[in-house]
Length: 171
Image (tube, rainbow, N blue to C red):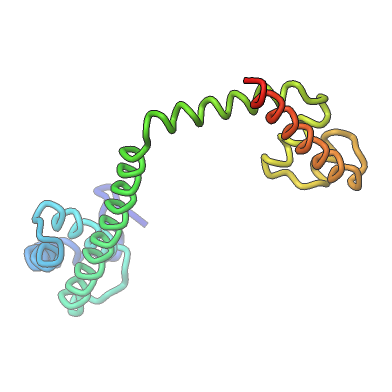
């Protein structure tokens, strides 16, 4: 429960604990992170957790120090993972060659054109199957028997290959 000023009821000691321990909590987080502004953000998280906890005020300094270290380490780990993901994405984008992009676009266009030449039921069955639908779901959507879906999809794949090959050799 929270009072009007946002201080949780039952933590009347929060202000006193905050005033006495805040510099130490920031220092612990800063040692882990190497950045005071980030450490201050961590300290806010730690004191919010403390405000929600039932940790006695006498145990607060130790609890807050451990919480600051754990929270800062978690922040560091998540920052590293995020940086790693961003770096991989950036490398993939940089490595992508303009020619590769054009070839991929052309291949997609060719597949769409060939797909449009297939009988409608085969084309829809193929698209639904490659969109992750089960045979039962495809059967219900196309009003087919579940046993005929596999045959329809295989025929559609074969017809698509033929269309692609026919137009590749003539182009």
